Length: 161
Image (cartoon, rainbow, N blue to C red):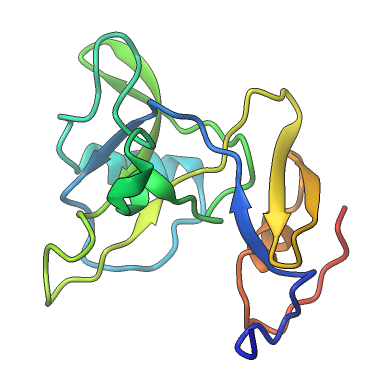
């Protein structure tokens, strides 16, 4: 708890996600610089293996939360909630996430991902903060504000919108 210098009421612990999401993995650029746009994310996803995209428009993301890998149990704050990352593969359109590799599969390459918090609510997602409180974050939230709730020691203190 001492390492959460932004405060427990300013730091997100978990957030809603869709199960059976589509994603690609095991490739991507050599940088871990955070992508800034949806088109950058789609381009990174295009570099990954497409074996996690299924013709029924679902994938295997977030289906084995006990597995512990990011694409099964995590989300990132790269993009605001419910951001759609349109991606077409073999003529089928997906809303896709990306994971560079399964965590722990390399001792020389970092794992990084774009795993968007998504819900079936049309206007946002519920997130739980470290203090145990649950708040609804609107999909139109400023990207920087959304991201600031995803760090524990960035010295950002944003008001919950």
